[in-house]
Length: 209
Image 1 (cartoon, rainbow, N blue to C red):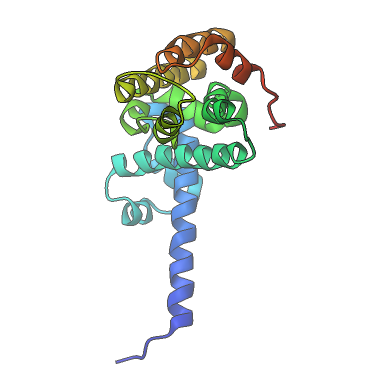
Image 2: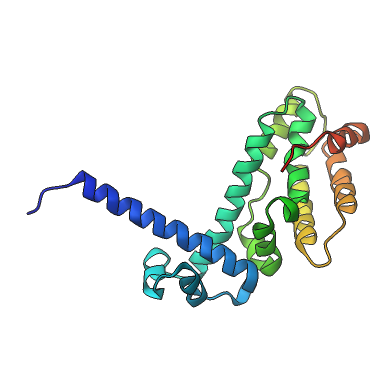
């Protein structure tokens, strides 16, 4: 029996990981352009790989495109979290990711196109809330920065509103940004934020994208 070669095994793992990354990136582009009619064959052509190679990584078409959209969501979340970490004001910190999500077509156009091209898939795959949003609301509630009853239900409502706003912002024609922020403001008042707190957060300076 041949002995274990860590270097060979490591190179093979890196090769497999690179292939998978290339497939997911190609699937994102195909999903953004073709939506629900996206095919594995189109992904293989763009990634310059055989269809059989695609299926080795993703046994089902649904697995491939779910992963592509989830990867887009995760990439956006990592980017948003990195920007949020520099904010010290607790209300601004809470609402800042929402402002970024409203600007999704501007900040992450490929992800926005994926949402617009296959809304049904986005509704299935999209997380229930922004990263850390629920925990941050409860933390501010414990600190008596905000006050509300039935907090978890209200958080769920905000998540649903934001999901629909995201779809609206990515549609053609897009939901106007001003209207999107107004709708979010109404939902946010339900967790005890005041109009002044929300207005201050909406008008705080944004970083260069």
